[in-house]
Amino acid sequence: MAKNAAERRRKAEERRIQREREERRRRFLRISAFSVTGVVLAGLVGFGVWVAYDRGRQSDPATIEGLRTFDGLTNNHVAEPVDYEQTPPAGGDHHAVWQNCGVYDAPVSTTNAVHSLEHGAVWITYEPDLPEEQVEQLNSLYTQGGYVLVSPYEDGDMPAPIVASAWGNQIRLDSPEDERLSQFLRAFERSPNVPEPGAACSGGLNMTAQELEEAGGLEALNGGM
Image (tube, rainbow, N blue to C red; front, side, top):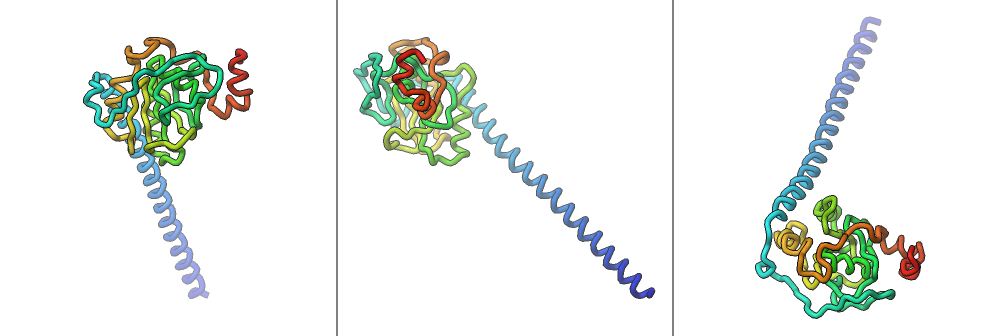
């Protein structure tokens, strides 16, 4: 009987030791997960802070390698979709209602976004399958009251994973960490060299293209939706 009691104590001690090991392992995993999340968030915040600081300095467009420019763009108000020469467009005829600047997780109406470019906005578009981490970096480039639009683009084949467009100007990028993106923002966000400098980038359309379509499309918007 004494032998059985000793055996039970031994097994109980083994179970206690095993429970302590498992608890230490769970604590370690929780701390590790928290640390990794913190590193990712810190990286995103750091990226946004760096770009915000960098955007405080002006940039000469002539120094931006790979910059594409487009002259002679018309800026008429139209009620129908437009077949633009660039993909995504960097200006041209557009709808009378502009797209509000901000971050969108789905494509926006192209003709409305082009109107925002006329007001001095920069439209950052990306392929829908862009890695989530890079999407978050792009989203961090918009700040409250800023003249930046960020959205995926599906209205035609993108010439690069990321394309930044301003009125009459465009650049193609493979990564949000490309220094030319901050140069482009410094040069063209709120640019005075647009048809309607200083015009609003809020108080317009705040829907995605799908939401607009479900609400009746451009026809409904034309009717004062």
